[in-house]
Image 1 (cartoon, rainbow, N blue to C red):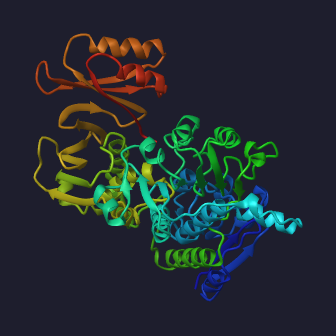
Image 2 (image 1 turned 120 degrees about the vertical axis):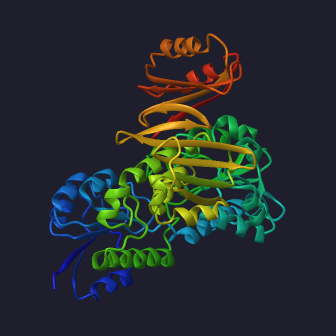
Image 3 (image 1 turned 90 degrees about the vertical axis):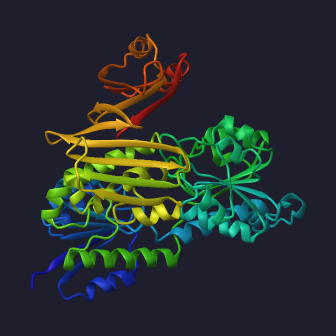
Length: 536
């Protein structure tokens, strides 16, 4: 029997011994454990004969490592984040990358909640005082959680678990999550706020559980923190960069923010001149959210089982870059799968907030095929923005949608319409919907309809979608503003419902316009909506 070589690599951060023993018990596996692979050269040398590599966050699987590992079939990440793995290059090499997105949910939620309690009762400062030989009871008067208002920013798995614990302590929970439906919020017994400012303005405590994206970076900036009531306390166990650290330090010093508890930082470890290190009323931990025996054992066992099943049976679970299909099926639906993800990404940027449903409709020849994976690709593309690309994949997309209260359906009609193959994606709540349709022309994908209007655009680069009153001069105004800011238009498609009604303009741009350009376009008379849609 052919042997599979498995490398468990790390930098003093091994996976659970139970997971290692599970792999070693398989007769067809040769397992090597090396926890001293910080340098890329060492990782390259250790990976040359590997069929599978399992890592935590300390070891990096770079393009050079992937090139050296000629036999490599799968990379397993014991944890959630996969930024230490070159996923695009792994995909190019045909290497499956899998992670364990649910293994540290409770661990991180509990750690964040523990930080909130430590912050409210000044536990670390009191501890330091006592071991320093002091007895300063008056200096460490704290605050109860009972009857306080908690704002949860991001109601995914971890945010939901945090909210449950807060409710058990008598806290009132308000939530901000543009992708959480009203029905799901009602089930969770949280008060859903329409925008971020409304969510934080009355909060006594704020906890953050969102991915770091261009939209969420510094979501708690100085302006927004000043909207909060005096004495607000901030907890961040999600991603460094969600809070503007300099602004937080400034408002802590002023006393407007009553305290902060941080487990994550924009630079880890934080440098010696890190602004918050000297700030009052701050609790720090060194990225310990997933650092419990139970979480580490869970993700270690889970990734070991996933890698084992992949090598022995070809099963793919929690893949972040490949579907679980046979080569023949993949060759047939592969182009539609990739296009489906693109349509999902695009509609996520124009869909109404807190959508309650996502529907994928197929017609023509595509309606005769098994489109399950294509639909999952659409859902994956849609969920990448609210959840984070390392948190959702083709396997867990449906469960993730259910957790958000998003109803997911698909329909297939084998008869052709005006297109030989058509994928229509509709997202919305009640009568407020967004629809994007796509087809193939000569083997190339095209966007053919947006909100029922005929357009034609290649899904690449940056797309600028504008809705305006149908009247002369609008196109010239758009071109003037974009030209003044050196933003070149590569392609343009126009559509309208009736003469003098509402017109739609879809521009393909060579570069992404700055936010001030979008704001200038929005201020033009007659403009109703402006969407800048990125494909990556």
